[in-house]
Image (cartoon, rainbow, N blue to C red; front, top):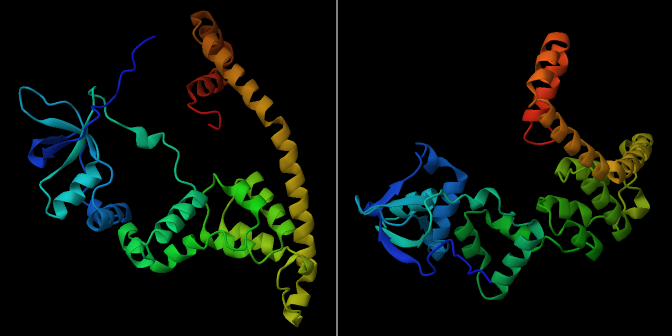
Length: 293
């Protein structure tokens, strides 16, 4: 059985900042960004949670190359720190796991906030640590109140605004499920779309039915039309979902075959002479990084 090779030295080391060599140039406006303020507030309130990532020491210069953590380093310097815990990588390649890691979903974020508050952390301190508005923290804490379990299960891996929960909880569970299915099918979890679905919801599907003022009665025909169009859209998305897997597989095979075809100089010469427009399209397909290009 082969031995597991670790990418990092298991024990973090304390390194002075003057021993770190940056591998990229930071923009002059970094300190003005929301991301920087959030990182700085978190370090100031609860300390450095994720160590910096560095290369092994260069024997000639005595310095480490900073592979990951440039924003954290800048924030630490602003807070007056001169050293920090670092993870030493066993190779010299830039550590770019942040580009491939799955982001925290809104439901997971809600559960983490609730757990932190249950363990004694006040919403005020949590808001300060995350550099968030206190009301936003409270909204995230109450994210799932009034939302039925089926919808929570459907949205557990998604990112969405707390306002969508506020809109959903005004509907009965059956309608909540319908709206969640529509938003997921359309890949559109926006407040605007949620409000449109709410406007198209019939009175009997609301927890507290809306009033029947003259202005609302005048738009009842529009609401009925929107309901009909929404149902039609939902059905079309279901049809597309059924064939999506086969379509993607076919596109992948076509792209692979086209790439192999254009490796043949005789074929390229023939297309360039007789059908240059086809050659251009084939080249675009071959060079596409993703199928949606």
